[in-house]
Figure 1 (cartoon, rainbow, N blue to C red):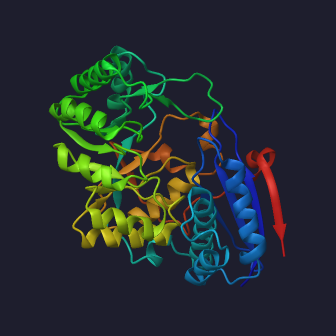
Figure 2 (cartoon, one colour; figure 1 turned 135 degrees about the vertical axis):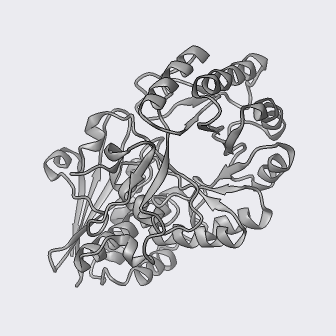
Length: 387
C-alpha cells in the first residue's frame, strides 16, 4: 500500500479555522488528520506545511510505517528540529491520518494498535462556555448551563475579555503591561461567582494563558487558592519554564502546561525542572498520536498525569479519544461542546455530541471512527497533492 494523494482543507466557521488533511492510498483506504492551529493566527502556514511535507516526503510512502514516516518528516524537513507549532502541526496532522488509515485497513479502532483500552470512557471537562461572559454574574449564568448539561468539571479564563466576531477565534486577556488592581479583583470575583454556582463537588480549572509576569501571577494565584482549583494552566509564558517552576513552588495548587510545547524533546525539559504537575500535550501540535503517547509515558515515569489539550475540530477529538483510551495516567480530557452546529457537521459522527453525564465513550469503529462529510467540506478545499 502506498500514499497517493493528500487533500488539504482550511475550514472557516464562526471564528474557528480547523486545518484538515485526508491522505489517500492506492488500496482505496483514506485517513483523516487535523492540525491544531484552529484559532489564533497561522492556519494558512499550517496548511502549507502539510502540503510541503506531503509533496517532499509523504507521497509514495507506505502508510503502515508510521514511525519511519514520522522520522523522515522530523529529520528531513530540516526545520522540525527545535521547530514550533506550524512544523509540528503539519507533522501531527499527517501522523494522525496514517493511524486512521492503518486502523481502517485492519478493521480495528486505533486504540487496539496502541496497546488496547485502559478505559471504556473518559471524563471530560467543558471549555469555551464563558467566551461571551464579562461580569461575574454573566460567568455564573454561563456556568449554570454547563451544570445543566451534566458536566462535573469545567474551565474558565479569569483574565479574559470577550471580543465579538473575532475572526481569529480568540479571546483577549489582560496584558502583563496593564494588569492592575481592578483586573485582579474582577478575576477573583469571576472565579468566586462560578465556584458559588457549581458548588464544592464540581472540578474547576483556571487557564491564565501565560499572560502575566511571574510576580503578578503568584500574587493573583494566592488569591485564588481558596477556590479549590483542580489546576492552574499556563501561569507564565510557556517558553519560560524556569519561571513556571517558581510559580509551582510558590502557590498551593497544581500547575498544568504543555499546549505550546512540541514533541518529547520540549517536554523533557519541563519534566526535568518539575515545573508542572499535569501535562497537556496536544495530538494536533505536539507531533501526533504516538508522540503524545510517548510524552504520557515520560510523565508516568515522573509520577505525573496528563490532561491532553484539545482545541481543534471533531477529527482531532476523535483521534485524541483513541489515545485517551490507552493512557494509564490520564486525568481528564478537554472538549469544546458549545460551538455552532456547523463545526460538528464536518464529519458524520462528531464525538462532542455524545457526551453523557460528563463522560465520553470510546468509539469502537475502525480507525478514528469518523468519516469526512465531503459535500460540506468542498467549499473549504485549499490544495490537492497527487503522486
